Image 1 (cartoon, rainbow, N blue to C red):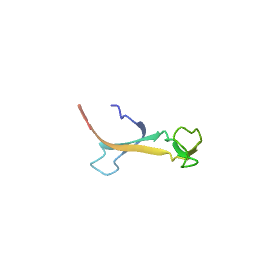
Image 2 (cartoon, rainbow, N blue to C red; image 1 turned 90 degrees about the vertical axis):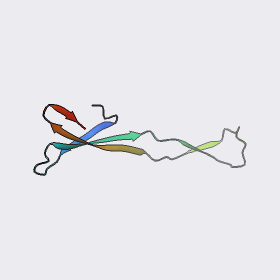
Image 3 (cartoon, rainbow, N blue to C red; image 1 turned 30 degrees about the vertical axis):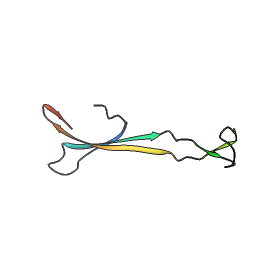
Amino acid sequence: MDTELSADCIEFCPFEGYHHFFVCGTYQVLAPEVKVTKINPDDSEDEDEAQAGPSQTRRTGRLLLFAVTEGQDSV
């Protein structure tokens, strides 16, 4: 199965009677977007004077629940 994002960890359920369930955690770091801010707001759009402001790293992820059963696949 393709989880679409990088699979980071799995954990089986520790409770009696539910050991056949497990969770797969996915995680992906998204490329930061560069924000450009004009140095002088009165400059025309043709001016080359611009300053790249800091951008925050963004992350995304999912938790996928699976059940392991005999003879069939379940999601």
